[in-house]
Image 1 (cartoon, one colour):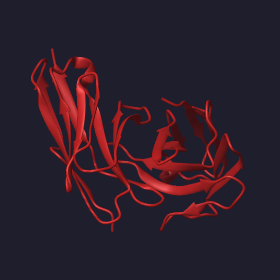
Image 2 (cartoon, one colour):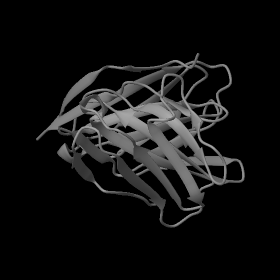
Image 3 (cartoon, one colour):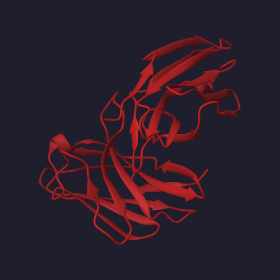
Length: 117
Length: 108
């Protein structure tokens, strides 16, 4: 399968600061990447869809000014959590779409554990 | 609205005891049905994509099948290393919608 990396794997920050998480597709080009959030013992919740060279599409209820997404190249998308608060503490996972003909595959990164103190 | 329902919520198996996980989904607009495995503290690992009723795919001890309204993930003779949460997701035109998952625990 394809490889998607995330950096950092965990981060602790103080309330009010901003944190940037990087997501890279290592062995394929991804015009579309996705950012998810997962709370303990819950399933993945899609936050936004990131398209290379254009603005991200946010799901209902996700604050676009708080969760800034940039997809500047075909292998890199970044999520910046601005003015982080303790309630933003969560497991953030990115995903990259790979299409080939009629097949569609979506591969996930290892996740980033964010703790806001 | 996309609906994906997985059952059971949790499954405890003895090593070698085969079983099946169920995923029922909203049929309208389905473009594909995905299965992932997720270990604690890690991102989901892609297992299978199924596109049409009757389709089956296998990988080691896992076999996924698709009907018009459901998908099943069969685990044959499981080993402790098969312990994980198995996630099912339906694909519409632009995103995956996930079920809550089935947590499988295999005891030696």
